[in-house]
Amino acid sequence: MHENYTALMSLLLDREATAAEERELRTHLATCPACALTWDRWRVLDRRLTNAPLLAPPVGFTDRVLARLHERRQRSTWQKWLGSGLVLLWGVLFCGFWLAVAGLIWWGLRHPLEAALVLSTAAQLVSGVSWVLRSVGTVVSSVGTGTLALGVGLSGCLTGCLALLWVWVVGRSRSWVRAAAPA
Image (cartoon, rainbow, N blue to C red):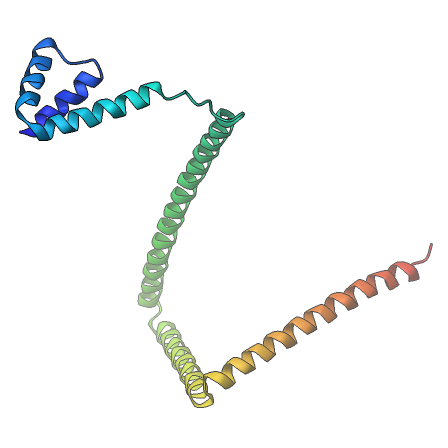
């Protein structure tokens, strides 16, 4: 019930209430102390906001906002194109995969002996890869995480040193090539 009167208070402060609505609110305020207190607080706040000085935005504020909006629109357009491209790529890969499967099935039906050889080789390859992965897992679990972390760190350092050495040698060899070239 009081929500109706708070809506009327808002209309009256915004100078949008009719005379009948204003009379209804005034009658209610005379009988309801809670709404009268709310009305007094709202009027004080309205006066403070009305009397507050207008603040000007900082110099260049509008230009910065417009530039950000332009960037956001460009980013949104780019993201839409990227998303569309990814969906298209996924669709092409999905269709290509199933076309390849259909082609392999067709080929296998036309050449049963060769298909058996290909399937046997694929099964051996999968078996070999799974054996290698199991072996790596066994080594990792038997070595321990501390030793493994040390080994990975040392290999990374060694790789970085070798890369720096390679860059240094390539840089020096180019200067030797230039110096040795006939004029």
